Amino acid sequence: MEYLLVDGYNIINAWTDTFNLQTESLEDCRNKLLNIMSNYQGFKKIRVIVVFDAHLVKGSKEKHETFDNITVVFTKENETADNYIERFVHNMGSLHTIRVATSDYLEQTIVLSNGGIRMSPRELKEEVERAAKNARLDMSSRPINANDIMSRIDSELREKLEKFRRGKGDRGEA
Image 1 (spheres, rainbow, N blue to C red):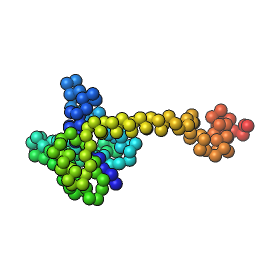
Image 2 (cartoon, one colour):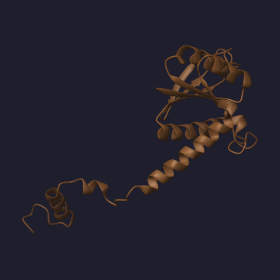
Image 3 (tube, rainbow, N blue to C red):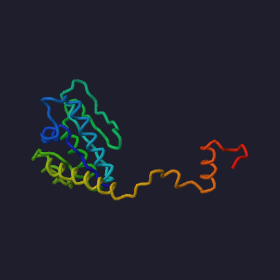
Image 4 (tube, rainbow, N blue to C red):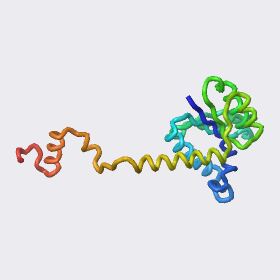
């Protein structure tokens, strides 16, 4: 199993061409990041965990939520995203492949020393964009069937349904 841990606020602050904290609320930026990471996870088929600091929120408890197909973690009071990520990598790094996306150099060093793989915000952005492009290419190369459900139905049943649609159902009309 492969995990990607994303230091949420770190990425939001690093991707200035994607997020504008001057014109967008923090909540909107979080939701945009979660949508981006959910799409990425859908294409890559890895476990994505996005971690947000809540360490300055008085009385906050660690909270795990699911957003589409990814895990979202809000840290507890007095615990930073870095603390959570370090603990996760320390506990799971020898069992799984764990990549961590952050621009924090100290965090990258700690991740590497615990068996994780560091990923800069720029590298993550390039990989997300590459995955999105590959997904578009994959979808455009699939044949388009205007009525995919009907193509899966037995021909005899399809014929009966067509008669019914035309108003000539079970009234004995042909």
